[in-house]
Image (cartoon, rainbow, N blue to C red):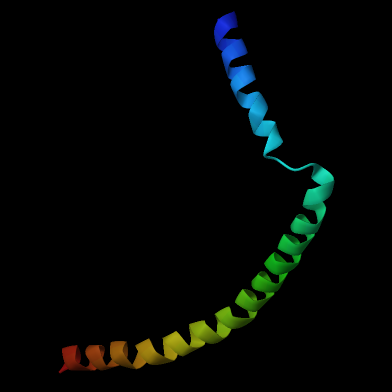
Length: 71
């Protein structure tokens, strides 16, 4: 078990070279945060318009189908 622990520990150690320090990630995280906020704002403003447009397109088709069933 100890051998497995050392194998995993020393095989994962070189991976720390590929990760930049946290101070380098601050700009990336800030940019990602701004992008996410803008995307959420855009989605929330578009969703009601898209929903009403789809309902305007679909509603007449359902009511026409009901009228044909009544005849």
